[in-house]
Figure 1 (cartoon, rainbow, N blue to C red):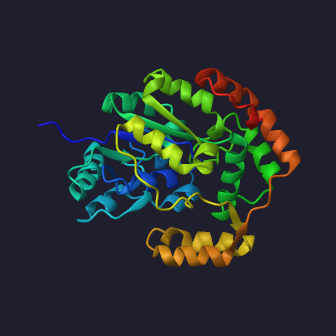
Figure 2 (tube, helix red, strand yellow):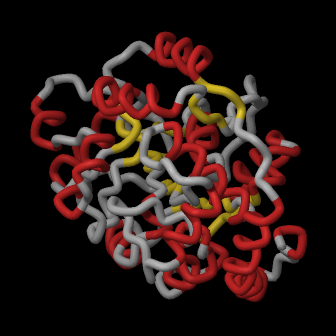
Figure 3 (cartoon, rainbow, N blue to C red):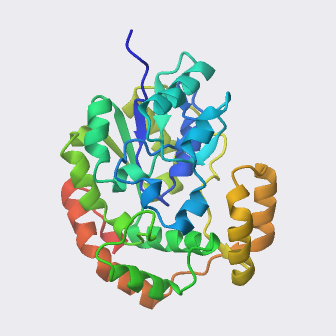
Length: 312
């Protein structure tokens, strides 16, 4: 008997609403999310031994320790090397709901990874692949505010973007990849070498935020599932930055490794007390990002046939 497999993949882009979308998909009775939202199993070129000590401290991933436990705890991210362990995630998801049509792997590393398209093609050639793409200028700034929040960034937005633009390229797990993660045309082209365009369902972030129900109805049609009424459309992460940068940096070093173990209610309370809404992106920084990313936006238009002039 053939093993059950994951067959629905939300591959990114990072900071484009994937957490909200995966949470929404997990509410559907025919979809079972993996206990690790982002197991990163098929991005075999992105593994923690190559990450910086700062990133490893943030990720706090120990594959052997995680899979030793009888009950697999819900977790946001991990990098699962072992095929056997990945199958354990799938089996766990199916055991909770044996009648599902889809098992969901929502790893944002897949869109960026050079290896993931071929790896996933080998694993699930008929798999359903979903992308949610956000204006890469807005995506970069949202990523910056996240890096600031987690104590990974101390420079101003413009300084940070210029620093990474000079790296040629930045690397996942060592740098923030503010610009690289927004190079959607380059990333999508790799996926199109392994999958036909009609096997990839693209959701545009602005459509998802403007009318989540309409976006979900279209996604359910692609998945050949009955649609369902969304109970909560206020899930998209709102950009926030720490009130006290120095205190936040210390707290993330000291308490950051514990965040996966803290009650979600406590994490939410701490965020409310220690964070404020991020300021609007200033015009000089926006101009820099537009210049850096316009060519990729135009190439994405050519690949998808979508008018993205409003992104520039």
